[in-house]
Amino acid sequence: MARASSNRRKTVVTVLAWAIGLLIFFPILWTVLTSFKTEAEAVASPPSFINFHWTLENYAEVQSRSDYFRHFLNSVVISLGSTVLGLIIAIPAAWSMAFVPAKRTKDILMWMLSTKMLPPVGVLIPIYLIFRDIGLLDSLLGLIIVLMLINLPIIIWMLFTYFREIPGEILEAARMDGAGLKAELLYVLTPMAVPGIASTLLLNIILAWNEAFWTLNLTAAKAAPLTAFIASYSSPEGLFYAKLSAASTMAIAPILILGWFSQKQLVRGLTFGAVK
Amino acid sequence: MATTHSRAAARLMLSPAVLLLLGWMIIPLSMTIYFSFLHYNLLIPGTHDFIGFANYSYFLTDPAFFAALFNTLLLVGGVLAITIVGGVLLAILLDQPMWGQGIVRILVIAPFFVMPTVGALVWKNMFMNPVNGLFAHMAKALGLQPFDFLAQAPLASIIGMVAWQWLPFATLILLTALQSLDREQLEASEMDGASPFSTFFYITLPHLARAITVVVLIQTIFLLSVFAEILVTTNGGPGYATTNITYLVYAQSLLQFDVGGGSAGGIVAVILANIVAIFLMRMIGKNLDI
Image 1 (tube, rainbow over the protein chains, first blue to last red):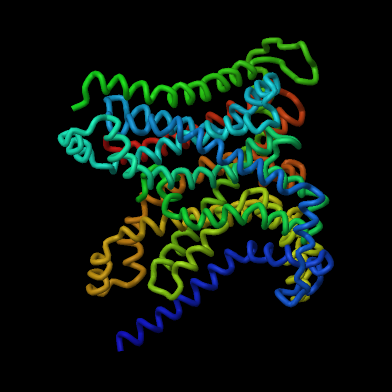
Image 2: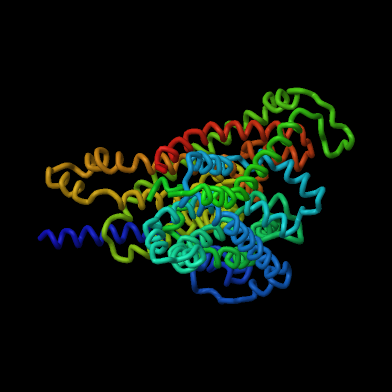
């Protein structure tokens, strides 16, 4: 009896959860579907769900009219560049705080976090003017630097929480066995640190890919990543639903896939270890 | 254990990050503070007169400031209310045994990975457009007059869009917190004949309190700076109906080129964010045992 009722309960929960899940996901699904319609079908009333003439012409047109691929490359360069640069600076910092904690370590960590809380409008004007004067406005390098700096606290914090879980005894054991500093780093610590570094890399690529304050304010035509590229559809081109959908699908697809792999890291990275 | 030698090495490893963040924080912020006391407009080159607190008194007495402050509070409060209530309910639902849990999780989490400009434009054009949007089609099918969301209820529409993007975040964090809840405690309360409601209010909710606080604080930090969604949908309008502090400062400085006024606004935004940040930092600090 109990089994039957728990099965019924499971069915109800499943139906409800799937319905809500599909409802939340629907705008994305609808965008993907619309991207395969012709413009006429995209605004047809009543709208058709799947029985329309599937076409790829919107994708071709988005590419040929506004050079999607160049903006895509800008996004890749900016998000990858800022993340890798951030890791190069953050790994030694997180490393030293995790393995050689000092009295001030906690204060330093908290202070780093506080820089993340600085609202971007508080520094928008100086950054804009400095960039204008030294020629970094609308440049990939400029955005790499800014995005690296705004995400650096998150990178350091994430790495710190991962590194702290590496047991210090392992190091002592390695030293007892006569491992030098180089062997210690290469063969003992690196393999244990790689998963944490990979998770940090993943989450920060996502954050940088979707960053839409600095990318919108500091770029014009040349260095515009996908966030700014899509913003150019705000009007009146946004009324061409099929093309807007094709451009949107191409902008979110890569990161959606990466994102699904990083659910766990997301919690850890964005709550600064406060929720595990 | 740590020798003087390794301490020196550690300091050396730490210093690039500290210096960069210090530079990032202090240089532009002190420039903003400095600009905020100047009469400085990019359209009037050459004038950098010191005018004391005039920019502040101008910014703080501008009706647009009060509209923006009010909109900022409504936006943050509205999104928080939707995402916390929705997130708690959704997390409890997703924590139940079901078929295809992994897939449902993926569906629910997806909007968080959609870039803000895409999310906002899709909502604005394909759903909320009063002529061709899906909501308009649905209204017509039901024999109703289509509703012009961004003209009739602009701020509520933007709250809806932003909430759609942040609901997954709240859900995911609350779900993670929920999974650390002691199952035996739940079973024990069920054995003792507690109703689902009292189980929720006396066991689940207190357990989630900490995670809820974290979600509130982190979202507040991000929500105070909502920008792209406003830029691509309403440009802050109609009038000032959807202008928040962030957008107001942007408009003042990069659209009207009023560096002095914009800087004063930026400093006001920094002070507002700091009020929230202090609470968040205290929470995280308490949890950090070194």
